[in-house]
Image 1 (cartoon, rainbow over the protein chains, first blue to last red):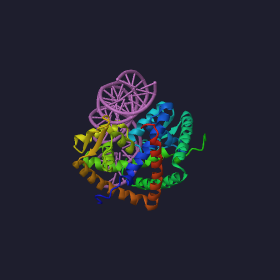
Image 2: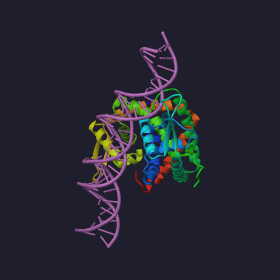
Image 3: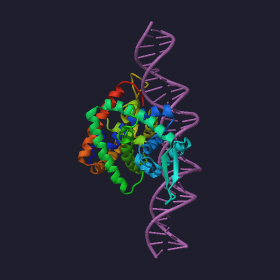
Image 4: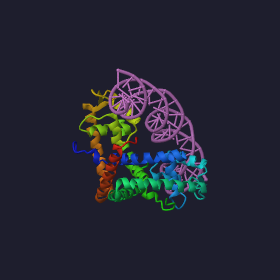
Length: 155
Length: 155
DNA sequence: GCCTATTAGTTGCAATCGTAACTATCGATT
DNA sequence: AATCGATAGTTACGATTGCAACTAATAGGC
């Protein structure tokens, strides 16, 4: 175990966290100010809005890497806002299928406008070549996550 | 503002957060179990341990993208453990220079062993080409962060 | 040399989070 | 069909967080 060879700047958890926090904090300030949305709420809304069909809470959790209690509370909050509706699964009554309402989809549309604008800023800040590399790298890690998620080990 | 053209899977804050959470949660479980360290404490220890010279709390905060209150509390906790010592700046008495003690450096060494092992697992999971792309991309975003940090706008 | 604005760091407090325990349901085994 | 283990989702509660307000000190204008 390389006692001295460790480079924090090559340690993925630290680097990813730093980068993620940096970009997330600024965007969160926007939707928080304009919509009073918390981060888990936005992430849940986004997961549902970007999906063609309904999802369960567990699916939202894995898709967004959020703890299930966070998802549970975000779902309740969005439901209270009438941005989301639940429906029972016929076959398995433990499951709840989550879908955005019309108002929820409209809100999602407005937020994605904000998001697109923010993404454009990031694109400019990072530069085309860096962005391309980042995307390729993220795809690799996303594939790895999916692979790891197929077998157990919870978040 | 592209109303329909939005792809969540291309939105950096969401993707980075997902990836960062995924890799961070698993590693956090390790150092939490073995050292009763919280995430901010590990990140502070890491920032200081990887630096050749002393840092101020603010520097730790920008380096690790942590809120200053998180840093402040982590510093207190590490100080109580005698892993870190503070010293006043002669010229500017608002500043505190933070350094690891001998025990702190030893702990950092042990933690980096854990980290190296974990990084090796990640390397294998992600694959060499993906890892290379990810690093290139992260470097680009890190440069962007540094550039953005030179001018104001706080975390 | 003073006044004002700014910065470093801390802390009270309300809000948020995660752990663990819980309810309800399902599937498999016998 | 009764039992046991696993899974979906919720919740009580203690721990952690971030905002805002604070203290202490510096820097810059005048």
